[in-house]
Structure formats: C-alpha cells, structure tokens
Image (cartoon, rainbow, N blue to C red):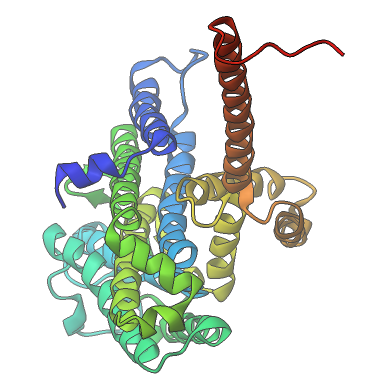
Length: 396
C-alpha cells in the first residue's frame, strides 16, 4: 500500500476525522498526565479508560461498516472476533501475573489452580511473550473468519441466512467459553491483570498510553478501510453489494473478494478487542453474547452505513448515551431505548447521522452551484448585450 494510495483516499471529511482523532489522542493523555487534579482542563484517569473503551468500540464499528456498508455482508457475530482478540491479549496478561496471584503459582493462572489443573494446556504456550500474543490477536480471529467465510461464501450463503449463521457461530463460542474445562476461566473469564510489557496496568501513564494506542489503531484502521473502499477493489465490493449476481456474471470471483474483506474486518475487530481488555481489566464469555454483535450493528446504522466516519461516530454516541442512561433511573429501560433509537433512525434517518448530513450538504452544494451557474449565465448575457452581440429586449 503506497503513500500515493493513502493520500488519494483522503477526502475532506476523512482528513477532518483524522485531525480530530489525532488531537484527541494527544491532548487528552497530556491533560491527564501534566495538569493538576484541580485544573478545569484536567481529564481524570477513569475518563481516559472510558474514552479508550469508546475508541475500541469505534474500531469494531469500522470493521463492521467495511463489510456491511461496502460489501453488503451483514454479520451478526462480529463480537466473536472482538472477544477472541480480547482473550488472546488476556492470556498474555494472565501469564504476566506469575507469583503475584492469589495462589502464587508461577506458571498456572489462579483459576487453573482452583480447578486443580496440574499443568498448563498446550494452547497457552507462548503467551508469556508479547509478540506471540500480538500475532494471535490477528491470527486467531483472521483464521476463524477465513475458514467460516470460505465455507459460507463458497456455498453462496447470503442475506439473512448468512446473518443467522454468524449469530449461531458467536453463540456456539459463548457456550464453549462458559465451560470451566475449556481452559479460559469459565464464567468468570480472565481478570486481575497486573502488568503489560512490564508497566503497571493501573498506572496513569499506562492508561494514557493505551488510550493513545487505541486512537492510533483507529486511525490506521480508518486509513486501511479508506484505501480499500476508494480503490478498484472497493468499486468491485460496492458492485457486489448492489448486484452480486450481475458482478459474478461479469467474471469477477465474488467469493474471493468477500472472503478477503471479511477476513480483514475480523482482524480489525481482533485488534479492537486486544486494546479493549487491558483498559477495562476483564474479558469473559459475555463478550460473545449475540446481543453485543447486534448492538454493534446498531452503532453503524445510527452513525451512517457506508461512510466509515459515521460508523466510528455512531459507536461513540451510542455508547456515551449508554453510559449516561444506564447509571440512573432509566437503566432498566436502556435496551428499549436502544431499540427505539434503531427504529427511529431506520424510519427518519435511513442514511444515519453522517449519511443524512452528507446528503444535505451535497444538496446545498448543488443549489449553490446552480445559483452560481445562473449568475454566470446572466453575466455573460449582459456582457453580450453590451457588446451588441445580442439585441436588447424591447419593453412591451
């Protein structure tokens, strides 16, 4: 991917988004670390972690918008890839605890000691190294997406049927990870993390660094998505979204295109999950819940499907609303409010927040251009009359 491709893929809205993201990713950590607690501009550490969680959700929404907004693949199981990336990072963090755990076992995590495990399972080998965990964050979700997509797309499963089997996939993983003998902590999951790369996870500096890295990952993910959707590959993806059978008839290997973008999207979701875990301090099977994947689709719909910027914005807006409304008397009614929001957006703003704004902006630009064209035509006609080219109109 050359710099020319990245530069060419940036329009005005993409540039503004990246500038805002860069400002937020730099200024918020600095205000947390450099300004005193009593300062008006000081950002508390808990807000840094909260905003970091929002950024990770934005990256997840971006990965869904890439396949749904531009290729027409509605996945209701993308939370599975998010959770798998989180578990890969959580396994590394658990191996860093060592003798500081409750049972002080240098090899086995506390939950394994509690369940009388005698030795570490083979699939935990290598997670004491960060590079191996980082590789698994990409490889495990990507491999699952590749195998799943190869079977589904090769069988030409599309539409609501594909959505149902993606939901079935994440539900099957939910049931598997709930088992205590599966080796991932069962219902309690993985928690009580201490260090990451030798730094205290709870320290203010580590929290600020994780927030910055989350913003950086979101920016890189956005650039990758923009490079994909503005290239020739992106045009084929849009053609598949709008007329898959016709695109296949023209000779394109539709399955290969869908498999590539689905795998790429899963890897992005895995990175989002890996950055999410050290900031929230826990990963459990609840992240596989199908409702989480459906909620992520709602973020994209609210922000604007097929806009990328709207997907990230929708994730932040909806999760901020969730934080506000679930901490008060309206907490029991949040799911009803979320469903009502989805219905209202579908009926009143079918293009989402950013999509509707772009439509209004383009309509306004067209009106302004029409006015400029009329004014230019009137000026040319007036100049022609003054030069005698056109006879002046006689008063009736």
